[in-house]
Length: 316
Ligand SMILES: [Zn+2]
Image (tube, rainbow, N blue to C red; front, side):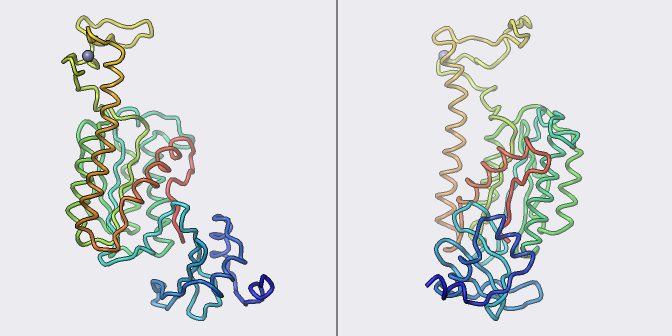
């Protein structure tokens, strides 16, 4: 059997081979996909050339029309997203939420003046340019950018995914981040935009990039009514030089902790509620919130630590 599979002729080319090596896919798996996998028409190439898509044992493999030339391949369960391969009518709408709070001005990412410069350069290269290289088409894929500080600001509204968008994102790398990073208004805005568009998109995606936990608790009071994250009167400092905060007289430590934790719970519930209602109105093939979950964690954990990290891997 293995002999038969490997005897199947399959021509590899540099691009397909590189993607396959990146994703740990053996050439034998591709030969097996052609021989035993499910064959469907794939999205055509840029020049309109017909392609085939084979799915077999968790691997998707795209060939040319003759099934003999390897174009690209990816594993179904590795969390990578390929917008070019997005199923469904209407293409995709991606909302980017980027933290624009004061901590983003820190200069701790090698080769970048600020974290802001790093995140926007990563988005331009590893998201926009990577998806374009993978064949994502500008007219089918739109991107909205929200910057998150005290409030949420829509900076780019449903722009086409193209080289102009990459340039616009890189230009935002020079912007001045300030104040707090409040997750809840940013999530409200992002989810409202995605929900409004859910009925005519095949793929909805939220990429949420932040260097820290939410700041929303700063303006909240504990269950006993004390604003436990507000600075105490008199400009008093702790031993570490931080502002002394107002204390709850009932349960000082626990109330500060629980006020902060409640914000995290609110954020998660917001996303889950929105995903449920979007799924009800979206087209049947809509993919949501899968991309939200996988891409968000990857972005948040990687980009701030590596100068050329890949927060977003395309599936081409
Ligand atoms: Zn309390």
